[in-house]
Amino acid sequence: MNSLMRGFVISAIFVAAVLAESPTALEFRTISLRGDKGGMLAVVNGQPRLVNSTTAWSEWTLRETAKGWTIQGRLSAEKPELRYLAVDVKGKVTLVSEPGDGAYWKLIRKGPGHSFDATIQASGGKFDGWYLGFSDVQEMIERNNRKHESYREELSEKPGPRTKLYIFIDGP
Picture (spheres, helix red, strand yellow):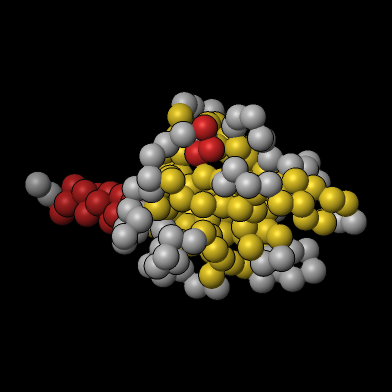
C-alpha cells in the first residue's frame, strides 16, 4: 500500500471514529402518553408530571451518550435552569441538576418517522429496564392561571398502557 493510500485509510478511520463518538442531540417538543389519559410531559413545581393541556408542556432534549439517553428540560420559563430526568435510589422519578446514576435511559422507537411511538426504560442500577410511565392517581395543578389534570411520573416493572409514549420531534 503506498503512502497516499495509507494516509487516506488513516484519515477515513479517524473521521469515522470522531463521527461515531459524537453525541446525537434530538430536540423534542413534546413527550406525550398514548391511551385514555393523554397528556404531555411537563415540569410542575420543579417535578416531572403528565399534564392534560396543550399549553402546559415543557420542551425536552434527548441526547444519546455511551451510558444511554439523557432527557433534559427546563424548570420553567421563569426559571430556565436545565434539569435531567432521573430515577432516585428509591425508584422515584425526579429532576436533577447533573447527570449521574439514574439519569440515563433506553429509548425504544416503535417505528420510523420524524415523530414516533416509543417506550423509555431506566438504564442501569436497581431499576434497569423498568419503564417510564405515569400513575393512575389524578392531581389538579395550576399552570398559566388554569387548572389542569396532572399525573406523577413513575416506573413500572412491566410495559402497559401507562408506559406507551408518543414523541413529537420539533428539531432537526
